[in-house]
Amino acid sequence: MATTKPRTSSFSRNFSSAHSSKTPGLKHGPNGTTFISSGIPDLDKILCGGFPLGSLVLVMEDAEAPHHMLLLRNFMSQGLVHNQPLLYASPSRDPRGFLGTLPSPGTSKDDKSRDNSTEQEKGLRIAWQYKKYFGDDQESANAIDSKYEFCNDFDLRRPFDRHFFCGKHVECVSILDSSSLSTFPECCATFLSQVPRNDGNISSAGRIAIQSLCAPQCDHSNMEWKMLSFLRSLKSMLRSSNAVAVVTFPPSLLSPSFSKRWQHMADTLLSVRAIPDEDKELAKLLTGYQDMVGLLNVHKVAQINTQVPKILEATTFSIKLQKRRYLVLECLNQAPIDGSSGSSYGSTGSCSGSSKTGSLEF
Image 1 (cartoon, helix red, strand yellow):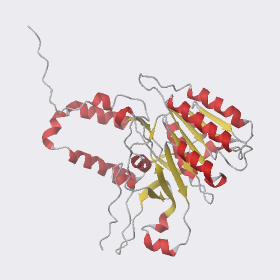
Image 2 (tube, rainbow, N blue to C red):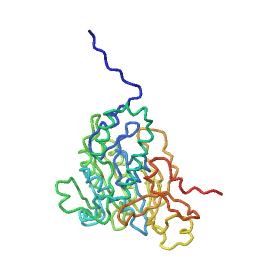
Image 3 (cartoon, rainbow, N blue to C red):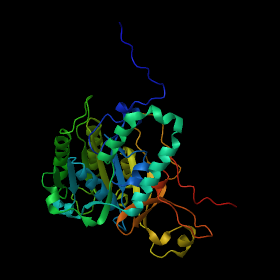
Image 4 (cartoon, rainbow, N blue to C red):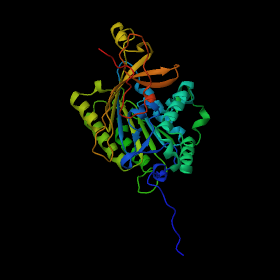
């Protein structure tokens, strides 16, 4: 007698594909894209998932404030938490000393309450009559998500212990000398060969963090064509590897034409800038101005395996330090009459939506 296959409903979801990778720090997205976290939960939501593997991220620095270091530190710390190989390059004599400033994961009561509220909203979106089709698969998927946390909240006032770096795959390179720019591409190629891209499962993902590529103290700061050639070579190597490179640079030190070329090379392009300490006119226009430490602009979002552009409803966000410890990004809201404050971008839970709490009625 032939055995009959159990009937499956058309409403059942395939969790094996959505959670096919059990590697910590990886998340699958649309069109076969795999993301790693930027180390900032709000920035991951803004970028519709994080940084895609094989992409080049450029961050334009502000000459008046080192806000780009906040993004770079969180990016590096997130990779260390997930035991991902890390290559750090800096225009300093001792780049390994920078590791002592990396923040460690922490927990915030406000973040926990925010995460709990978003989970409740997700549960409410599923109609009660369809919950029976999820069954054990839903529970197993939630167990995987809780075991492998994609993004952490890092306490900027509590660095890692020295013993934490024992056993971690961390390489530090100085790009201060002129000869370093000639040997550094080979160093990147050797590092990326450890995380090659293949058709099988992704066992690990690498991270490259380059600080102030064209800093004035570097001997190659005036070699614009050579630095552009390096970025082109780095982007080509990233495409054939499971890694992401974040490069910060001061655009004011480049000629306008080369600055545009650098920006064109980026898959994801961000910029940070400081805000005046006492700007009364701006304080009247923006909600929570006294808590802002800077502004983040999203100029370009990576498009991997797709030709459909990602359109963001907001491209400028305020940088705030929650409890002076945790990095938070918020949509800019015009100050209402009642003086209510804006909400964090993470509370919206949408990759293309901005906070509508500050809408005005004329």
